[in-house]
Length: 145
Image (cartoon, rainbow, N blue to C red; front, side):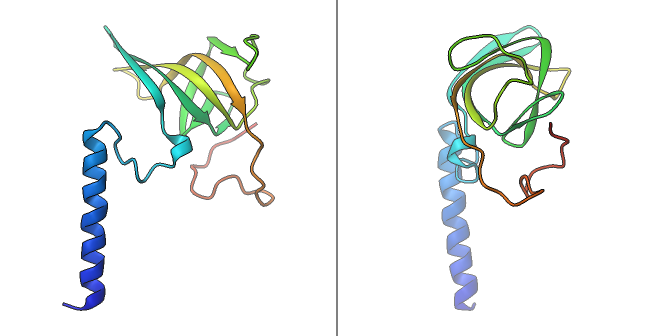
């Protein structure tokens, strides 16, 4: 066996070991997910038709249907309460992204798309300086505002 194959095997074993330990502590694929995309202070409540999760999350972008969190669409309904950093009610259009927010969302067993119940912006971030027309090369193709 060559040295490069040996080194690759060792690195793969270390990587998998770290992820298995992270998975046991409730952080699935913690190494693969950037720190800003991970959920913080997660609280889970079970209901008859699914679960309700409350945590702090990084809002990456927004669409007409909702917000993008960790490259996944979280739907926003007309009944969703959106608050700014000062606690004032705002619309989806007025919501500034990227930002860190306290999000309460519902995961129903009959629907794979999470639905946001309430959202309060904790801090607004400056938009990253990216090239013209480039949003995120790794992100799914999603129509943004």
